[in-house]
Length: 108
View 1 (cartoon, one colour):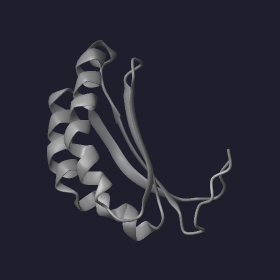
View 2 (tube, rainbow, N blue to C red):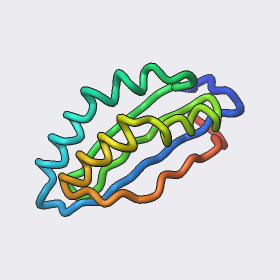
View 3 (spheres, rainbow, N blue to C red):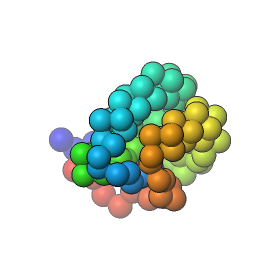
View 4 (cartoon, rainbow, N blue to C red):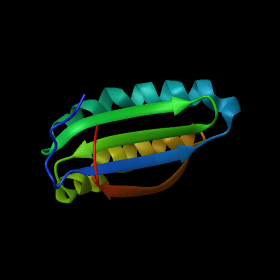
């Protein structure tokens, strides 16, 4: 499936690592944070898609596609993400890796 994305599209990647022995706790936390993150993120202009997942191998990821760098940067000011979800993730043992925004090169 080929997506029609603007030439200014940005891929935002947020990652974290955790002890695989805590997978069930992290998976539960990731699903629970969706109850407040989804409505907050959906209100932001420029969101094209958003995906979140946790692996039993000890890592989790949030990947989102935005129509511009400016709109992707809204996430770095979203209270539900930078305060609430970060707090819940740390309580479950997640060590976060610095977030990176990638200008889109190509898509399939």
